[in-house]
Image 1 (cartoon, helix red, strand yellow):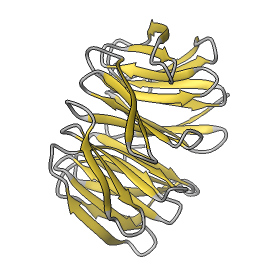
Image 2 (cartoon, rainbow, N blue to C red; image 1 turned 90 degrees about the vertical axis):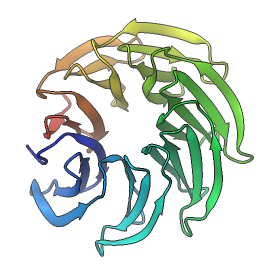
Image 3 (tube, rainbow, N blue to C red; image 1 turned 90 degrees about the horizontal axis):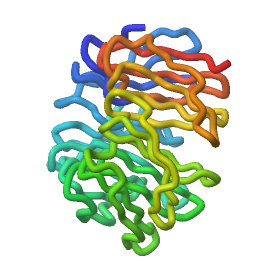
Length: 280
């Protein structure tokens, strides 16, 4: 279904709702029980390029102009706003046990905020270019970051110390997902998927997956989903990355995917469409 008049860059699921952020400068809320839009539209000063929904009901937004917003989805009121500048907020992740919010900025800086007070706890450069993805690992109390400069790194969240860093994709890293039994899986601008030992940063496996940048990776029912600028979503059977299916409903770049429930996931694209897929 067409939700926006312009590309959709950000996506988050908090059942039964799906939130989307677009270049048309709006945030919309879709009810999946009725597949209709809620009376919830937030207008932003710049395109929303990162989004996360918290269990508390807060919707966290990262904008292209560097603004960070926290919105209470129940009252539809903004509760916090801060302008980081720095070329935009490209990644948001959270840790409920540590009560942290993590932000990856366009200038390569990484921010840690208290999820209650929004106090800035840590704000330093981790990369030489935009941090495109953040991945929190509760088991390790670490966060992985992926950058346009091609590097992937890992930060200890107790002492905020960099544990490791290595060059994963020379043209830039756009996506990643951690599977403990397999490793850290990354997607690059050149269309390759690579699998790394997440402790040592050594390459275990690599293969060409798409004909364009891989913008998102998700693991769902023991399968890897990859979304690409080449307008397709591909499904790979784990642990051997056996190709299962290629999905081509979108007419333009597929920018993000998210699990909806145990049997389905959703995707958004530059074509302004949201598509719901049932896994078989």
